[in-house]
Image (cartoon, rainbow, N blue to C red; front, side, top):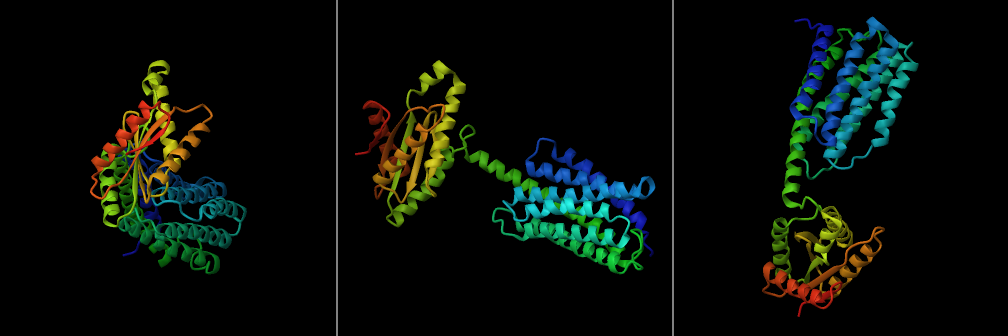
Length: 374
């Protein structure tokens, strides 16, 4: 069976355009930054392939250069999606530099077929290699399955793209134009179909994984402050307390309450009260050490569980917190705090109760202070 390369490319264009249209319909418009980058990459691919196939009929040089720019931009957008889904990836500047260099070199050297084919395909192969590197680099929170699927697709594309560049640059008689029926050209066109379908599936799985991760975060955090909510704190704190008791390690818990919070709401409005909560939450997170648990316990009350800590460390945390709040440019509310240390047979409820009692004494003694549990 003889495969017509032009027909394969036209069908590929239909698939690319269909994918670009279907993704926002399927995913919606209000999606994450990574998902928007993925959708943008599909649109850039559709525009790029359209320009590439119609260029010979409406103005080869400039439309072809536009197609190169769109295809290079699509790889940048895919890299942006991976950078968000997988965590910070290396190679951002090189990816951007290639996105500029590929169409610029292609347009300037358009008169030389071997140069423009070799240059553009080598640049695309490098961009694909950077995407493969981003996928292969460690990302503990991301599934290896979708990463492996997309990695295989992009790696195969990188190989055939580089091969086409070598053919066009050094064996021009075997690949004199993009519709040439050279086996590598036919294989590349067919591979684009397969890679488009499989990599789209892989990226959709990545998007679903991101959505599930976001739901887990929302279920465990307080929507206003971004701190752990009470239920999530209780689950994690129970494990921390059990480990501390098993290994006989010190542990301290602070209950912290905003002074005169009702007065803030009554005199300045609930928006001011919400901002006071957010200000204290930011200061709590900034003052906490690695491994400490910080939560909004309810209302204007916060809870901090400090590992490897006694009363001295609890007092140091309290000082850091108050000093940070004192530097707030618009002022910050006052705080009362109570601290308790873990006893050998303590439960979380018992530890919280003792810290709460100390907090009540801090308020009774005039507020704006830390009191240690007896």
